[in-house]
Length: 132
Image 1 (tube, rainbow, N blue to C red):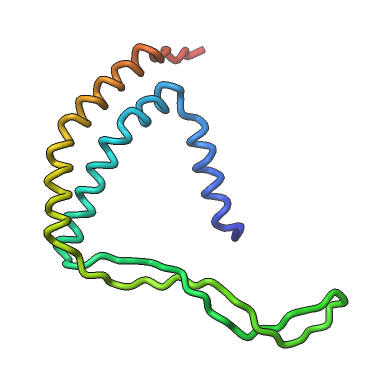
Image 2 (tube, rainbow, N blue to C red):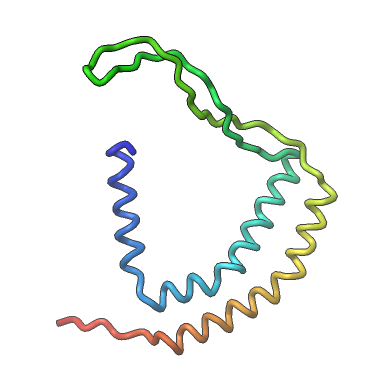
């Protein structure tokens, strides 16, 4: 990993570790409902575009310089995995059916999330922050 990417990643990990038990419980309680909303957004975008993206990794053989145990360099072939992203046409009927299924499930998921969140608030009540 590059050091420049490690610094923001470390900061995000520290922020995630600072979440209170109530915050973690609330986030977990609402996760299925949020996931369904995000899937509906993705479906709407795919239907509007008419295609979706698929990424797969392909093996690419490349020429490079290798070194032996004594530091001598020699030419060699090395296999590398490279991402390849391509457009895939969507099955509009299947996406519309899945969207309708999610639309029917959302009210129940929301009720379940609200009930779980209420339980989280009872289990982990907020404690006031003292100014001292």
